[in-house]
Length: 175
Image (cartoon, rainbow, N blue to C red; front, side, top):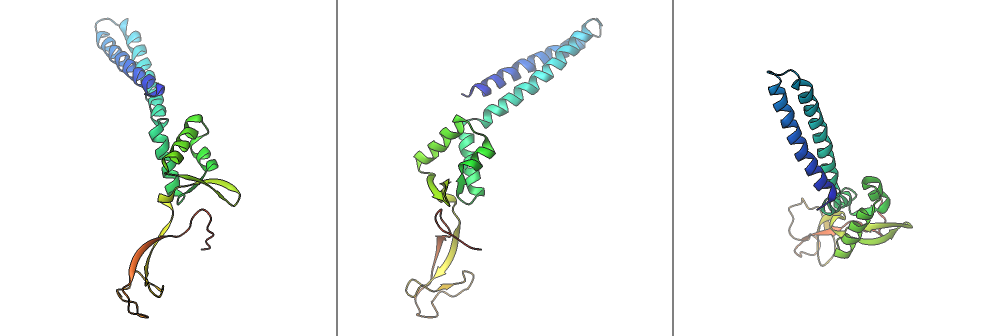
């Protein structure tokens, strides 16, 4: 388990105990007013400790390997399957853990390194742009997908609907 997650959980548990003890002291302050400042101090310390514990716990969750890989995949999805290491660094910072998870995604085959316009990028084939086309397999003519035609008007063959990758890491597309 991540050390920050463990530390955050321990701090939260200690904070809950301290807060409850502070509440008990405040309740007991009805009969003895000397307990009021101690109860208030425990309550405030418990709340501060709880805030720190939750913050550290959340940082630990963000730094888990699974979470880092998911954030990298989200970046790839938003960038249509191509992400530079600079984009990853600006979104997640530069750390050995982030670099380790990038390497793990490459080793699993989820991403592959490539060059585009002299820059090193990571290509995530699953997130590359795709286009749905209706095409005649014999004469190669394309027809609108929303068109109800099932036969090629040119040669009479059955039209096939397929998904095609629009652009890859080495393709140039003008829009």
